[in-house]
Image 1 (cartoon, helix red, strand yellow):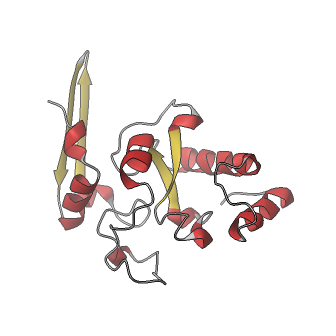
Image 2 (image 1 turned 90 degrees about the horizontal axis):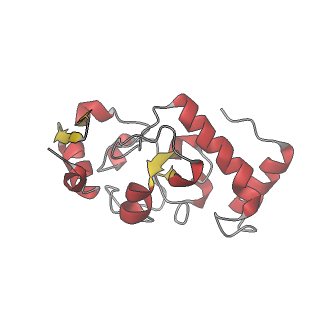
Length: 169
């Protein structure tokens, strides 16, 4: 759990009530820093989708990933069960504000904790290794990166995040 100050809780309320419109608003900086530090210390320092390492990266190159996008599900913007860490490639280049990974994109009230509502591997509710194996070996200047889907969710994740583009032999 994250301990927010009284002022930070007020800022969160302002965001949830649309008084603060933009996620890049400076008033959110300390809150976003706490969220990143929470995930960096409680999870592996890997992108939640491609599993590439984020260790020792500057905070500005690590994204707070809103699994259900904050623009469509504003009420979940600070819910830790809807958050994780991702690389810029997976978050900003591929996923962005898309919701086409949901089983029923018409559902206005989704049970966001039910893994059956997601076509891809949910970073917080699914076991990544059961669905998609990730192999990464670097020897001197040679890299070997391979993903092996183990399930339909693993295959969807592999395709959705274009993981074939970062595989190397």
